[in-house]
Image 1: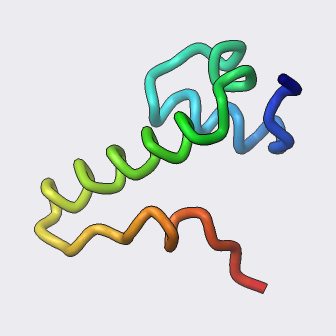
Image 2: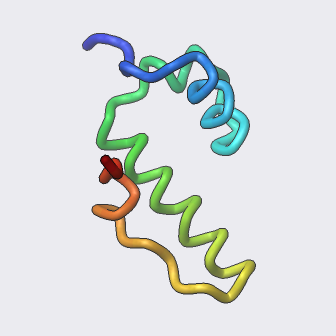
Length: 63
């Protein structure tokens, strides 16, 4: 399995948000990363009272 193809800045921000070491994040399977991002989004939505984005919205990139 190859490391995630993300920028160093993105890796640092994701590692901090998910509270995992950068090394663990970089070797995390993509499906687990997406699952953790969805959980993070739900938690943020619970705190703010706003509806959470769906997992498909999190993974889409805007042109």
